[in-house]
Image (cartoon, rainbow, N blue to C red):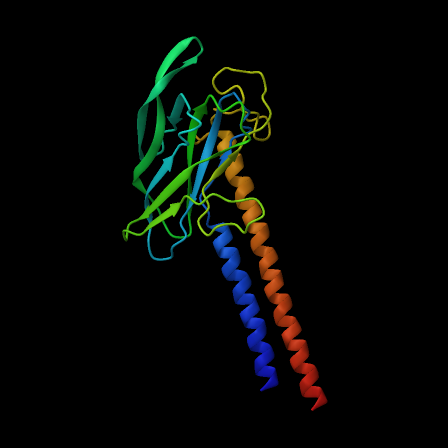
Length: 247
């Protein structure tokens, strides 16, 4: 009976670790291909993982913060996906590069494609000018599955509080570079790849490197969790063995 209790406790602990880690890995997130410098332009990637085992993601909607209007938002063309850009008129026009801007992008929606279980998709967007007086931008995303389930990634994290269950993607901004040309603010992602450069498959090198880095991080976390589970099982086995020897 005591051995069964130890084994059950170890299994419960391992299951809890895996459940929590699965939730953490499944967030919709946003990362720049290089850096997102204040006041500049950058290419940012919205990473959308499929967190369901029995349904595919068929639509992703990203809402841009109304209090941080961007005058330029250009989604990259993705095979199989159609992007729709929605704009709204400004009460007070903005002046960018000497031109009056009367409307800004408020939402981008991707449809027509499919993210199958166990896979993810990145949605690159060229944006600017980024805010000059903020350290971050919060984008609210809505993920729709082909079984009509909708997940709203719209909760904003608060300092000192636990991460919400469905956090909104947050883009961290870096110090201003002084460069103001479209795309000039993005630093090379890796190995000299510049924002906008293409590889042999026509993909942006920066976005590809970011995806590889993210995948590597996820793999490392997964291996670490597997190690914890194996360690718990070993402890449970050792305790059980000692109890049997004592008896």
